[in-house]
Length: 182
Image (cartoon, rainbow, N blue to C red; front, side, top):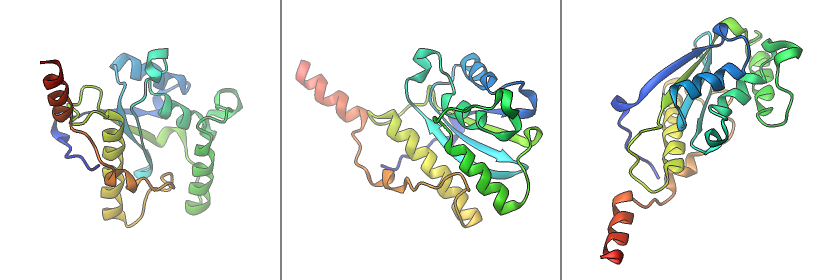
């Protein structure tokens, strides 16, 4: 399912890791901003490392921004004391190693920026906000590929199939159940 995105109504936030003392501050900021559905971009010195998304309910358990937190938290620059060690999000370690092998530079804390497209109150057209957020992420990656010629180093999985999935429009769903209850 490919959705038409109204980019003009999506607010954007940025987090600069140089301003953070620990990765958990990402969750605190996301909670403060009330962001529960989002796409994000992780950049280092202007190089896009990865696009990602979340539209799950982890925020209900107080885990705002969990996807970003897990990936940023696995970065080497936190050192042994603050760097995450669990398996959740540890695929970031591969991304970081691949980046350093490719570009021959280490990712430094002072130059990582996270751009967040807040989709929390976005007027989704289908009954599946999750699928729409995945489609929006896919469009961000596709746009990047058109400009650069390849996907960001952290987007190793191909999610292009999401654009071929069928979707039920919310208006269709509402009409079916309105008539049933009338």
